Length: 261
Image (cartoon, rainbow, N blue to C red; front, side, top):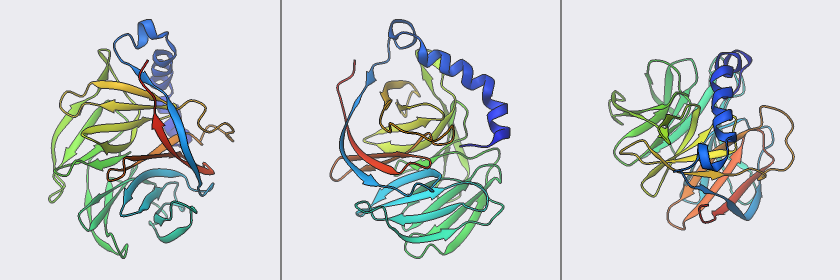
């Protein structure tokens, strides 16, 4: 997520959270283990894609991109990074996360309070629905949709009516975790990119407690500016493959996690 106005509004909150992440392990992460990573393989990725959402389905990646006038939903070939199919959202919409539900694809927006439900195969618009507040990331647990809005609370939505059913407050070492952005359901956990950081939170979906941090510092050595942050998690449950990328990144990475420290 990036916009000058948003960065101004969230600057104070981010500064406080960044200070928390920067504390020594003995204080900030005394009870929360931190995992590193090993790169298995690097793949090409569209360096102009302002990645907002990512998921894996039947051998392909599905990706959403943001920025007004540039927001898209696309189907991507993993090995080449080639966009096989795409649809552009209306110019006034700032696209955010995406998730699959059956034969539908749900794409949310940042401030427009509108979600677009597309046919997974054709990308044709099936319907729209509205929600209050902002939309950042979205995933699903085979029973509900799970949506983030940049706050420490995750919203759970009924996948048919799209009505909110409950909320989950996310904490780490007793402190609320804000800036929760792109989401992925991974083997019974909610994984969330923390905006403007190189960390992914592994969240217990029953308690909201962060059970571990994944530290991806150094994954992409060269960055061009403050916008090209880590954002994008996709999991191939069948082959246990984990893919990550970021906004405007020229590469997508398949990674393996190392043991917690």
